[in-house]
Length: 532
Image 1 (tube, rainbow, N blue to C red):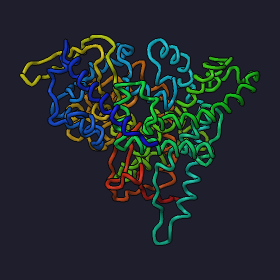
Image 2 (image 1 turned 90 degrees about the vertical axis):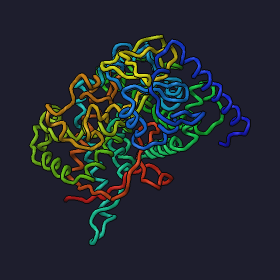
Image 3 (image 1 turned 60 degrees about the vertical axis):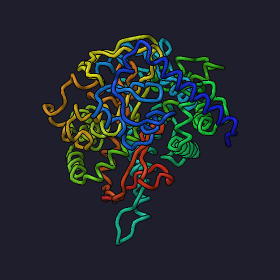
Image 4 (image 1 turned 180 degrees about the vertical axis):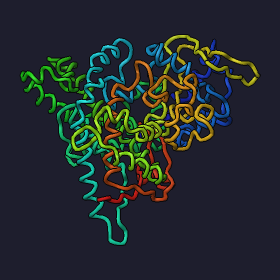
């Protein structure tokens, strides 16, 4: 949709007023204005454009190295934070005093609805308490059959594609791995969550979800996609304006909700079945939670389905894709991992590893999984806003430009705080000189890992799933399917580097594209060779 000149001028004026007012307010009774700041910064966008436009989170990583674990950003005196004690204070000890910012919640509502990622306070506590039993160790363990079936189906269709596109002179085929891994993860969440078959990405619904998601991601990687969220942060009511970068957020939700309504009606007719009454799958849990499922209640139920369909498959496939890219670039690591998984004889059907064996008997697979999530966290940054005046503790003091040392940071109510996950996970002070190098071996030597005091309280000391009451509710499922799909792919295929230079940008998740070919869309091109 075209935006009128009057709308553009209104948006520009609103942003200027917001930035000027925010800068004035943030200086009062706060330490943020006393912190070091990066050089440069646009007169209007401050440092936010640079942070958005820089690949692999380099803006945050570079400035954490140079300025320390907390620094101010121009453009409203935003606080960029990587300090573990302060992060624990916000996410674990006081999670509901630091809520998602005005930029994130409206976008979540448009994309996923008023579900668990959107909820705050008592509403979040209640939703999480109800949904948590779906993702216990025991329940995830019982999803084994569906996960293996989806992984095997992926291997089958990928093999057909590779064999039909290779030649005698050039065995193997060049594929965009992004087009394939998400098929399996979407199948898994469809099967274990709702009893729905997305047919390995070939169903009409699966194609519509993928197409709309790609369009949304590409829009977020262009300049209007940068500006629109900033405007929403300043003026949430603006979500009703006919701006394409804003309105497009709701298209995926519309598609998934249409599918969800059908799934709900199908399952409701089966709820008299005793097995359905005692079922612990996601759909059964949601329907038991809200048996009437009418009007607003039904709408919220559909929002939960949208959330788990989208978040439940896209983030896992995203992490898996980056790991395959690194294994293709490091064939000795790929060979080492393939050797481990092919030589291991598990206790499951056909010698497959069981859920417990995936957790404890395949150390290099576990190391690759952890290193991939450390290097490439799908949500490479998040934001929080302080609802109260507060003091953020620091384990290690920071030095102001005047030479004064601060052991804590005073923040005012309304302070916006950027938490760059990718910079936390790649902090050179914590992870050493090779913090930005993919090296799974670091996880095999407990003595070589950073001291716990320098790490967050997230899974394995990294922040990829967040921490505290806000930790990803489905992280056990994500890790299990990641390992099963990786195992299946490496048993069947060899992945080779194409030599392209890969860049990344944040748009909903950390998105990859080929340097100089951003307009071609998100992609990780790999040569895939069938091993059978």
